[in-house]
Image (cartoon, rainbow over the protein chains, first blue to last red):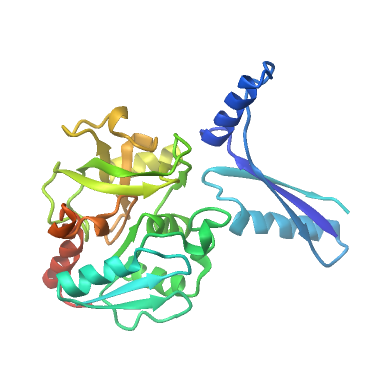
Length: 80
Length: 234
């Protein structure tokens, strides 16, 4: 099975990277851009077929390593 | 008096720290490879600067899982003095030995230059030889030093006087002009509640002897030597 884990700056934490990207998009003429937050996606392949168990595992991976929950949020999606 | 300098793959200020402890202070000092699990009766631990594990994922995120970090955590919990410099500070944050986190600098650039900071707390293992409020010049060299913490942690840091250093201008005013990286409340370094674990983004190891034009950082290392002389060997 495959699971995707998205990690992104929490909304109450300033994201300098997202701000710089938003400014660059505006400079390119994308005037509709209001805000950008830049995160990461982890594409993880796992053994097993129990989607609920995989989701639980993936959340632990995010909590323990992939996200720094002081400044980052995450979500988990079992894809196939 | 024996220092242990922890070496992660990608540490690059380890030799400076060893030189200070051994050649300048005349103490015993040894490298401890990150795969070791024993600190071998050391009296003080230094986590040096550099780019442990290439800063993959986040600065310090992978180093925290090195085998030696369990020993460092035990040592810290037992009251042993631990200093994290720059990347070493980031490792301490990721390991939860100090609270909070660092974000990329507000400029999004790696910054390598001298900064000024004010000594806010001289009651830690690594700051007791400074004067309260002393303004010190130290070099920084980092891309991710923009300290932040949840509001309740910031409140704890303030109330318990755990901010060791704040960025300031040359006159000692804690303001935006003196803040190189955007750190919350100009925080350059903090301590744990007991004051035995200290971490900071600036590099005392790069300003510890006159040959380098600045030796104000040496007091951090001398502080712990004095602290151990006072409290007795561990």
